[in-house]
Length: 289
Ligand SMILES: Nc1ncnc2c1ncn2[C@@H]1O[C@H](COP(=O)(O)OP(=O)(O)OP(=O)(O)O)[C@@H](O)[C@H]1O
Ligand SMILES: [Mg+2]
Image (cartoon, rainbow, N blue to C red; front, side, top):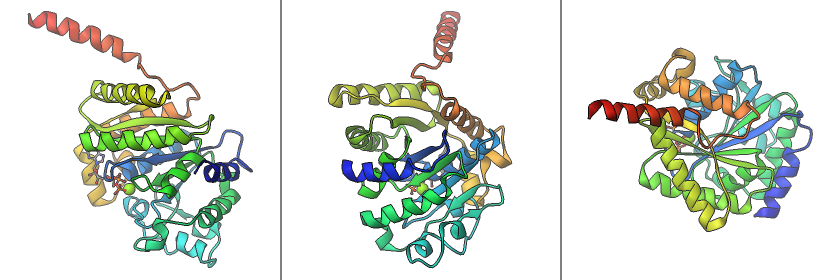
């Protein structure tokens, strides 16, 4: 798997802008919020001045188009069949977010052979130079397709929720990625659907310490997203929450993650606020007593 990923990575690393980043968004368990996060993250990165494209790498069960409220005519299937070029399948949504649509219901896309994965990445080479960031929305689980796309990226974000089964699966996929990870690739976690940041930090620290003791490698912390019922509504109604409600909790949390991703700084494991949160909660407890 490492050699395959190396080949994919070499392809990604040619002809790109100096600061270009390919960022995969993945998870062990399905339905933890990857596609919603990807779409909202793209929106904020764009607002922060980056040119962004989403690659829908959930190849057989495409969802990016649905969440953007679009119905593109052409998709990766047309690229793989040789009917269309990569530039012909790029779709610009009404939010100005560009994406490469996948298709739905083609089983053969779920487990693409390596030559086809290489074919897609080679086609992507033609467009790298036009963008600062490519977000890759993967399917859930430990398939070779997913792991290869993650290993070929500059950063991979493992999204999880506090649910114990989601956490167990997040740990499993992180372990596989960390085991094969090239030295200059960064793996980080975003904890979704939490009550507050403390809950996210506890989860992150737990995951990190297990990974450190079992495989001797660390994972970064990219941030947290609180549970926000407005998000479920936006998915049902097919609009991008951050565009419609920039001040919603979900939007603010995703914007903070976008800023971390482009800050160029080492992602923090101990946000500055945590010290003050502890002090404040200590004071509050004193007041109750
Ligand atoms: N922060 C949040 N607050 C409330 N609900 C959320 C949040 N994040 C995600 N959800 C809910 O989770 C559902 C699944 O989200 P989404 O489709 O983005 O997950 P996914 O990980 O891409 O799923 P799949 O693995 O099937 O591709 C959404 O429809 C939404 O209702
Ligand atoms: Mg999805």
